[in-house]
Amino acid sequence: MASAPSLTEAALRRALLEREAAGLRRLRRLVDGPQGPEVVVEGRRLLAFCSNDYLGLAADPRLAEAAARALRRHGTGSGASHLVSGHMRPHHELEEALADFTGRARALVFSTGYMANLGVVGALAGRGDTVVEDRLNHASLLDAARLAGARLRRYPHADAAAAARLLARAQGRRLLVTDGVFSMDGDVAPLAALAETARAHGAWLVVDDAHGLGVVGPGGRGSLEAAGLDAAAAPVLVGTLGKAFGTFGAFVAGSEALVETLIQQARSYIYTTALPPAVAEAAREAVRIAAAEPWRRERLRGLVARFRAGAAALGLPLAPSGTPIQPLIVGEAEAAVRLSRALEARGIWVPAIRPPTVPPGRARLRITLSAAHDEAHVARLLEALAEAWRGCGGG
Image (cartoon, rainbow, N blue to C red):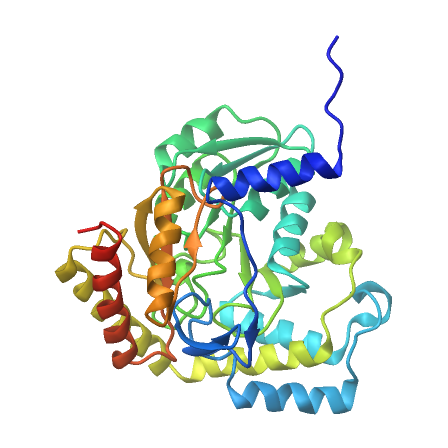
């Protein structure tokens, strides 16, 4: 009987070298200063098209002022979990603001989006239950079903008919789980069809709209608003505060019964320290601004349209997306890395996205736009892309 491989430092180093040789090793880049259209990366100023700061709020002075006021009043840390002594007034008021923004009865703030997804799926499903998910869902949603001990069944991307077939064979309690806007492709789930599928099969629809809230829909209420769906159609809405809202943390919005259930049963809520109160207060200010300043969404949509028109004129193979996430599909990981480096040499920062984040053969540049960009920034990006694409053998 063959012995199990040993875990050694040498084995780890070999694996890292193999990853690097395949163009898959990831590196952290050191950024100085606030997020914005231009950032200083390891001492060099670059025009960035890779942040999720879609509304340009991460460096808004009003958020910093709200955080500073909360720091003086409430201190730097919450000190404990929400159920011990860490549930402070800024958390409570943020939850009220999020419930109002999403049009739901209640909202519950989590420390991260990953924890929100682990918490909600783990509280609603377990052994003997079935969680049906889009194959391109965020890793946290897939991990949530596995950690809950439920049967995880995955359907081809955006295929509501395939989801229906899986739900028809499902056992126990049933969850149908999807991203609203898919983080690597920028497309939107077929939510109306999924909501009907869930209703027909006695399932609850769970939508993680991390990349849609604040951006998509007439009022920025996300992909469910854009699809005309209410809480009855999609009982569980997960959102993040670290993308369009420019701060940190996440939340689940839904009914009174749902939120109370999560308070009692969501392990990633119960057993973690609450957000710093200053972060919660900054997030509440961001939610207020997102609702009060629709020009940010309008400007962002205009920039997306301008970029897509320019890319089409250049013959660049953009994936179809009307959101701020604009994937330029390259193919192999090494080619995506070369294109990213060519752009950086021209002062543009767009990191390569490679497996396992995306499927093999689908490596890409994930270009993201922000309301903080302007038309001159987009023109610079298109000019650099035209040169780098030709120089790397594209076109």
